[in-house]
Amino acid sequence: MPKRIEGQVIVITGASSGIGLATAQAAARSGARVVMAARNAGDLHNAADDIRREGGEAIAVQADVAVFEQVELLANRAIEEFGRIDTWVNCAAVSAYATFVEQPLEDIRRIMDVNFLGQVHGAKAALPHLEQSAGALICVGSTLSDRGVPLQGAYCASKHALKGWLDSLRVELQHAGSAVRVTLVKPSSVNTPLFNKAKTQLGVMPQPIPPVYEPELAARVILRAAAGDERDAFVGGAGKFLSITERLSPRLVDVQQRLQGFDSQMTTWAKGADAPSNLYDPVAHDGGVRGDFTRTSHRRSAYQAVEADAVVFSLLASSVLVFGAQLLQVSSQRRFAPAVMKTAAAAFAGKALLTAFYEG
Image (cartoon, rainbow, N blue to C red; front, side, top):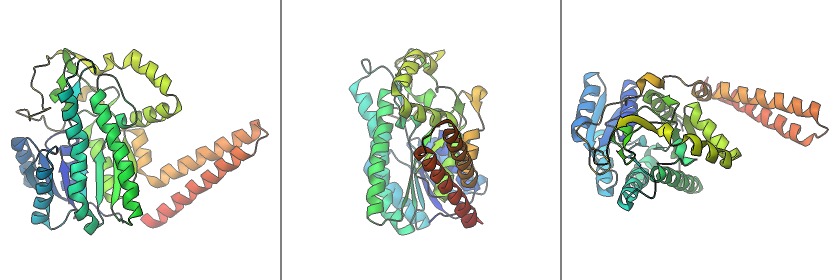
């Protein structure tokens, strides 16, 4: 059953910077009690202090999600402090930029340990508590959960693994009659410090593939999932478009990535492979909410604005299907496809009415 954010106890990993920090700040402003976790104890405690100074409730727990015992202690600390867990947000992630041929195997293992097994550890620790609260498990994946790109093979593999595992877990929980809500959030490129902290063997600092969105958009989607019941949720329309294109024509995306996928991920700022990164250990400063790409990043997403309103989205989908059915009916003697589209349109219209009634 959906819950208001106000009053929830929300655990967020990767909460010392980027999407995790933006989500913690937004959750606290909405009245949630926030348990923040990350490896960088200094930045983490400073972030929790900032939230408390603004009148919010937050505690900081140092933890490396790649170590299950530390994640288990994180869950226990949340219970000790607040008595329950309503939402658990798996947000911790690392990255390393290199071709597969050049990338050391230990770097690939580390990325899988943090990005994939770290989320498995979070679910393992959180699920017994989420069962009691009928809570939400929210896993932050990526657009790259649906489509791999060059220079980020290990990162893409970790996000693909996350999607496959979560598909299995979701159905298992449903089969068992669980009330836990499971959501996979798929951000498009987001302006976070991840790119500053990523290990790179490109000779330059990496950058997010344009278009780039601000972290607050991701925080909004995560909190929407914490208060609702969504299966998958994209951050920014670019990721949704890439996912649809991949389903329609993977070879077309292959060509596009071969032509644009390399240069679009490289800045002109020199950075060596031995430069500080957070792949194995935290850096001195995690960088706060935003990275270095604010000048070119988007604070709004038209797709997200429409998709966030279930009534508007359903009515829009219904209208498009009706229009498409009419076009098919006029231009073709076939009646089956228009009938199916009209049925789908009626279903979307019905969903809009039910949603409006429920929310009203």
